[in-house]
Length: 240
Image (cartoon, rainbow, N blue to C red):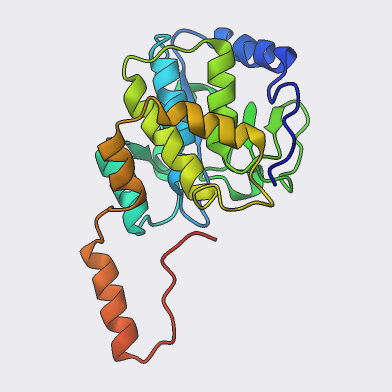
């Protein structure tokens, strides 16, 4: 059974600290939203970063999403294409790091971040993520990182110019990381409430496409053909 719902996932003090860091960003600086690199970012990480990017954009704050690793899973590619997610890499960071005044980790810890940089804020649901001194560590025991981001943005009162798109992204993130809420040992009441509330706002056709009918890429068939021709026992296409 899901864990019993606590009073709140995000405290008022945590909200205050997040807003304090965002509001103290110099006007000429951008925010770096960093996801994990190994394995490459999955729908939960992508949705978390995209939601933050759009929330910041609606506040007049520019940001970039930094990713690492080769993205080849069909669902991840579909997320990027359908939601028009633009990703930056480590080389871009090295050339432009002076343009950023705030670093937010989404669904990753310092040891697996796409770029080598010290974070100012960490949003993660992996309880083995190390606590970093001087950083706002929002590491919560829930089934998906999108759950944390949703509850925080809801508490902040974030309004989006494209609410259906963001709701769809976050719902897909939760759905994917919790195996459609079937991971009973990991799913909490926070995941259930977030998923339920988001589903009332999603673009249903897009949600179904990204969770059930995403295109299989040519690269997948190429790998499959290679595996069959070389008598490989199995080919991994999911996330660990």
